[in-house]
Length: 98
Image 1 (tube, one colour):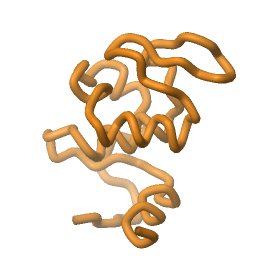
Image 2 (cartoon, rainbow, N blue to C red; image 1 turned 90 degrees about the vertical axis):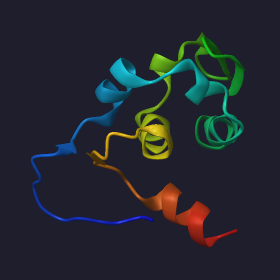
Image 3 (cartoon, helix red, strand yellow; image 1 turned 180 degrees about the vertical axis):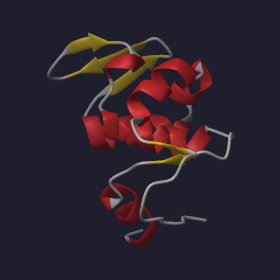
Image 4 (cartoon, one colour; image 1 turned 90 degrees about the horizontal axis):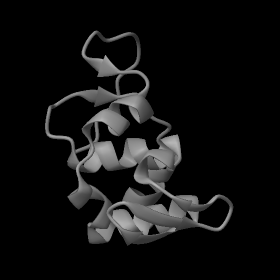
């Protein structure tokens, strides 16, 4: 379920890309949904858990993915119950435009 909150929250992660860089697991990157999200948002192809081929940057690591992709992956896989500051455009498009 998707919930939206407005206002400042102590338990929220306000800069998800940094949180992602320190928390993601290799399995998150190679998951079927992740591969699709990375291709859809960053136009990049997952080669392995440690290598992504970007048409702009060339070979990159998961830490070099866009902040938007990192936030969506956190929302998919992070099980801490934390709340992530996010732009919801992509999330809503995927939920309601199927």
